[in-house]
Image (tube, rainbow, N blue to C red; front, side, top):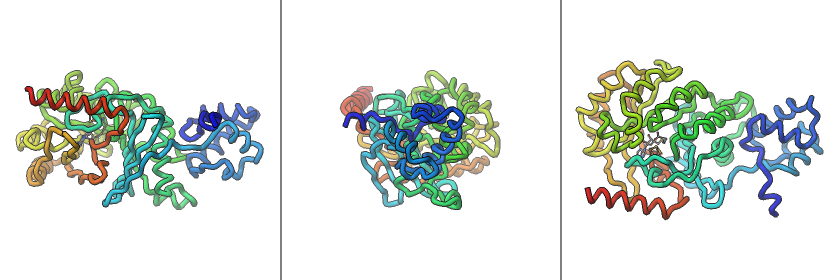
Length: 379
Ligand code: SAH
Ligand code: SF4
């Protein structure tokens, strides 16, 4: 019994770890490369969950691999499907440690999977539900990769024939779930290497977007190491307000953030940086702020994503009115920036931006929220 629990899964491993696994079952050195290649294809291209399906690997070797390993994904705690087709997965990584991933159809060529990089978040953006949950821990690269594998299992999205690669449900990945990816850059980069590998899941790095609240010292590294598309959670056009909404701004103010965007490796008109701007009624949604936004972004290849605020229980904000959002968008548009308004997806199952929050350490998080609300009342 304990033996099955402790068997490591090959799902989520990189080539080095697979090499170790293969050597560990006595595969001769000169065959290692070939065996790793075969395993890689079965695990990441075909998505098998049973060693028996690996038909080009001899039975005794399959059995030896199965003896010490599984192909398991983390347990799926809950799966909810929204009226609009959005699917939210609650993934259990260990006792009391859970993260969420959200599949959003109709993004890119087909659909995007929004994944988490941490359990909880160390930052405390005031409008974000995840921010009310203290950081539990960083995810490992394998835990990041298996979010995609779990979603592909559920969506029956592993190719059965080469042509299926053209009609995959998940074509894009966005690191816009729980956590701040740049505080877990090493594992995010390692996960991206697995996800973008052309022999496996093969999601191109140009279709992987990493969103940051503005951890300036890590931005250049992100570009160099991963060639990811960059998204910035901007949300305010002056330091005073941004200090309040996105407190990491106190360490890395707007000027530094925008400079880091100007020098982000690979940014160009073909690879624009996305600026996310959550629309908070009476807080950051005036015409003046729309004009200031345009001025700030001058010289940066940018697109602006206006996000209607998604409410959560106890949230201290309201969403701007639809007319306000449209007027704001028009000002930005007239200045020559694409400014799509992000249609809220999956609101009915709390799967929309900023609504993600697992129940890990629920008590502590709700206490923090209470404290925050009390502090607001007092001020
Ligand atoms: N921590 C990273 C990645 C999370 S991305 C970051 O902050 O960029 C999640 C996106 O949803 C961010 O742009 C975030 O600012 C936004 N968001 C958070 N709470 C929200 C809410 N309640 N309504 C709408 N968008 C929200
Ligand atoms: Fe963390 Fe991003 Fe939420 Fe801010 S918006 S609390 S950085 S997850």
